[in-house]
Length: 246
Ligand code: PGA
Image (cartoon, rainbow, N blue to C red; front, side, top):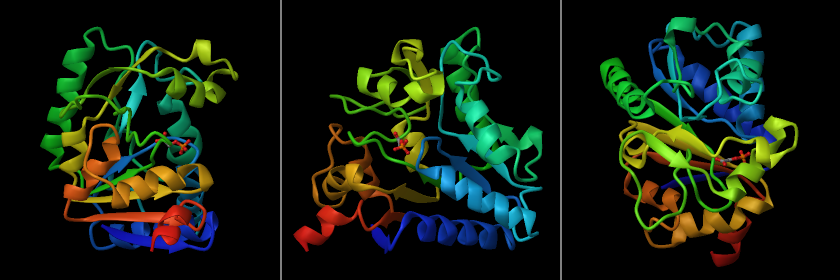
């Protein structure tokens, strides 16, 4: 795995945004896999700025988001769809029909997961999958467990994950849905290229385990070790435990 360490979060976000915009130049129809969370907010802001300066064109790009809460509609202020609308979709020129999302209110959630897998395949697969990482090593909503699911699937959220998402629900973790739909480990690992971004000291330990530890479902992100084209983009704080070991 390639690891790139940036002096701060802003430099990381800016560099990655410029790379994504540059890649869209020769390949305007790229398929992007997108995460939510605090970490990508700066990246999305930088992409919005590049677009405002006519330096990033998303007009032919397609996106697939990683996950969505079950039981709330897309227009709910706590939905990941609303998060993306606020932080990215309203700031760039993606065509609405090329924005793909799991529906939290699909009548048959399992059928919805199958529909999503088929849509990714029909689009030709994900070219660039962007990922954040939870402090427990989760990616998407693939939480540490004895077994991990391959395809897009329905998940029960851990209390810690519901607490981490409380801000989207007025600060009340009890309001965070108990279930979600998420791309699975195979969905993620089938992407042609993966870039995981992590910033801040709270991520230092899971990043060190991801880079130096064994592949284990106890740290879902450790499966990224098997992928040929993964880059970890870290700020100095998230890379801290790597430096100590080196
Ligand atoms: P964060 O979440 O960016 O808010 O830290 C990352 C994640 O849980 O995937």
